[in-house]
Structure formats: structure tokens, C-alpha cells
Length: 109
Image 1 (cartoon, one colour):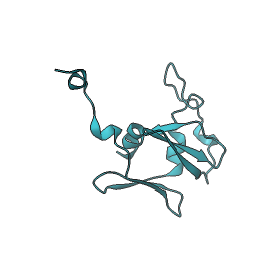
Image 2: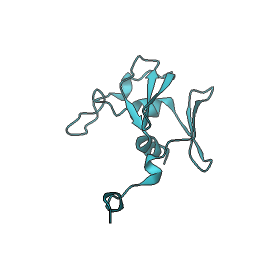
Image 3: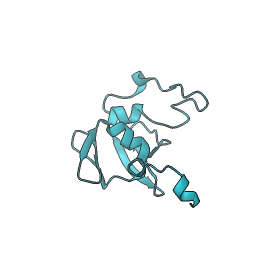
Image 4: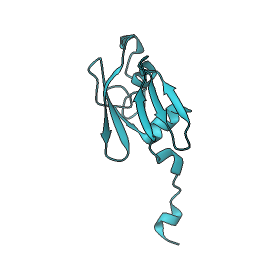
């Protein structure tokens, strides 16, 4: 039995979406393998930002006050980060959160 046989890999959690788009309402559309498309509001994605400025690194306590997120928040750009995540450049100037495939999959549930 090799090392990879002993590691419990959750294949679906680490699989990237087949497509990431933004619709006219500024919802982020994630199309997952198998064809399921999920629409996530820009506001909910921005509120779920996993960066150290939005989440306390050691406790996981939320630092971001949702009241500070503009009502018309939208992604200005979506950038690939390696083969494991995307970075949203938000219209409020925030851009430090890396949304892994696992994070996006969890938010899609």
C-alpha cells in the first residue's frame, strides 16, 4: 500500500468548476462537473471571503462587518490562482481572498 492509498482524498471537493461566469445581476455562476450550475450572490461571496483581513487566522472569528459591504458589490475581475483557487477583485477594492475549489463547493451547497 502506497502513501496515496492511505490519504483520504475527497475528489469532488478539489475539482474545479467547469465554468465561472457573472450574470447581468452580478451573481457568480459556477458550473460544476456534471452540468449543475449554481448562482451565488456577489454579496454572499464577498461576505464569505476567507482572507486574513476578513477572518481571524487563529480563531476563525469573522472580522468583516457585513454592514460595510456595498449593496451593489460585484466582481470586477476573476483571476485563476494556480490549479486550486480563484481570486475575485471586488468593486469595493478588496482582492486578497483566495477561494479554493473546496470553498466554492461548500458555498454552492
